[in-house]
Image 1 (tube, one colour):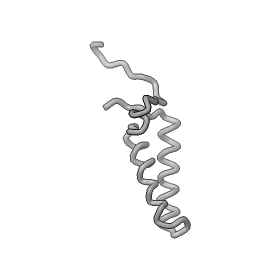
Image 2 (cartoon, helix red, strand yellow):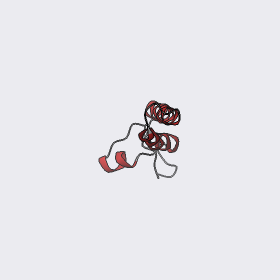
Image 3 (tube, helix red, strand yellow):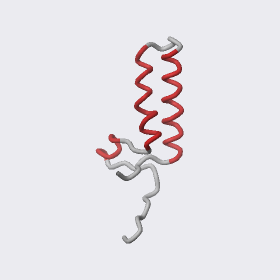
Image 4 (cartoon, one colour):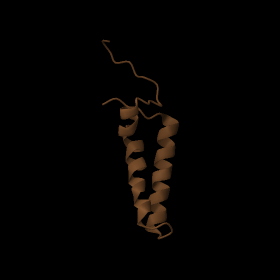
Length: 67
């Protein structure tokens, strides 16, 4: 699987995910805040399924050896 999430995008996703989860854990925004796991995981994995479907890539294309 190729990465399709760049550094800035990745940092924002991780930050937003952690913020949503923290706010949900404190009871500030309710249980919907636990959906922050989605941006957190896509940021940690540098892979977004929605980006793949839409053909979006926010990181530089890495060339593989031998190609």
